[in-house]
Amino acid sequence: MMNMACGNFYFLLLLVIFCISRNIVVDGKLSPKFYSSSCPNALTIVNEGVLEAINKEARVGASILRLHFHDCFVNGCDGSILLDDTTTFQSEKTAAPNNNSARGFEVVDNIKAKLEKACPGVVSCADILAIISRDAVVHYGGPTWKVRLGRRDSLTANRSAANAFIPGPSFNLINLTTNFAQFGLSTKDMVVLSGGHTIGLARCATFRSHIHNDTNINTAFAKSLQQKCPQSGNNNVLQPLDYQTKYRFDVKYYQNLVANKGLLHSDQQLYNGDKRADSLVKKYAMDQCRFFNDFAKSMLRMGNIKPLTGSNGEIRRNCRKPN
Ligand code: HEM
Ligand SMILES: *[C@@H]1O[C@H](CO)[C@@H](O)[C@H](O)[C@H]1NC(C)=O
Ligand SMILES: *[C@@H]1O[C@H](CO)[C@@H](O)[C@H](O)[C@H]1NC(C)=O
Ligand SMILES: *[C@@H]1O[C@H](CO)[C@@H](O)[C@H](O)[C@H]1NC(C)=O
Ligand SMILES: *[C@@H]1O[C@H](CO)[C@@H](O)[C@H](O)[C@H]1NC(C)=O
Figure 1 (cartoon, rainbow, N blue to C red):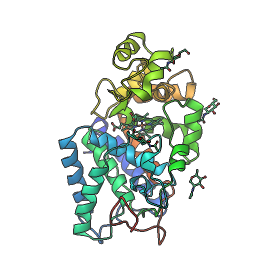
Figure 2 (tube, helix red, strand yellow):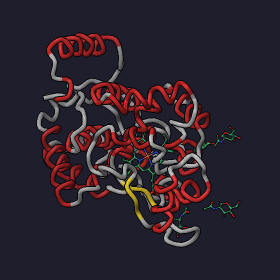
Figure 3 (tube, rainbow, N blue to C red):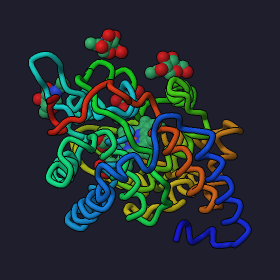
Figure 4 (cartoon, rainbow, N blue to C red):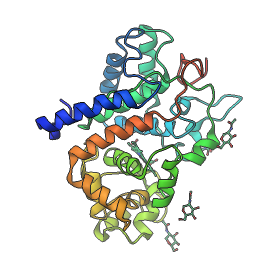
């Protein structure tokens, strides 16, 4: 099943050996079987919810993948992005990178409601984000992986931390590398996780200066985008991050970068003359198998950022508010 492009026996064998060794070595506290006795249908319930949601709206799987990323980069993968404002804290939803941009919260709510019926108080909102991201990537034709589970939910959110830690589209390569390094993620993790931009859409406001003022962009590509996203106005006009296949998880994103057809300034920074990043982009552009395997590994690493475990945090009953 996994990665049809990699369907060669020796490769699969190596992959199996690699995966087994990973299970032993990495990931300390989280485990793929965390709910296997406390909520045996959890993964099925989540998967059904994801498929239902994407069948209703093709884009929403991209949106929920982004939610997991924006959750993990703010005090770890603790479901903090899902909390609404309270009298004691301001939500991360309204931080600059998320306001009028982060979406898919109802998908999480619907799945959480079903999980609460099946196994009340058991499955955390932070874990739901990790599982739905994997399921969405698989749905769009990407790789699969065994999601590590057992994260607990935060009691608070922090808007200023969301503003401080979520990287923005104006970032240059050094900014991006430094930002990811804060979470123990390498340049390679950063380049491969940026491949998440093989699906989904971005607002004009986020790519305007790249298409009007940057020089490392294909001229015809820039011109056609300038029609849709002029120097001012049309802030919320949407364009695909991967102009070729916006709802297909493939290597077109990297091929676009090699052709100077990245949509965001930050995307094109990954292929802009720095040898190390350029060579990774070129490799992924030519090798879907490598992209898929590295993406799965890096998603596990991102999903491992500072989880709350043991008696820290709680299992929220409603992902939007602390119990
Ligand atoms: C490397 C640094 C990154 C930057 C600077 C960045 C920036 C952005 C921006 C500006 C948008 C458009 C937001 C809007 O229009 O409101 C976006 C969308 C998106 N990002 Fe990223 N991103 C980064 C990394 C990632 C990662 C690591 C993932 C997941 C693995 C990801 C997944 C997505 C997805 C799927 C969308 C489309 C969401 C939708 O259609 O609703 N991004 N990103
Ligand atoms: C979020 O966006 C809304 C609507 O555009 C705006 O009214 C509000 O001030 C923004 N919130 C923050 C915290 O910037
Ligand atoms: C929220 O995050 C900011 C920026 O990282 C930090 O300075 C502040 O102490 C945090 N607030 C709380 C209540 O943790
Ligand atoms: C990005 O890097 C530039 C220099 O390369 C630096 O001046 C700027 O402060 C950095 N921005 C962020 C948000 O780290
Ligand atoms: C592009 O640069 C010009 C000249 O510096 C500036 O006036 C304009 O606002 C910039 N446009 C965007 C979209 O950043």
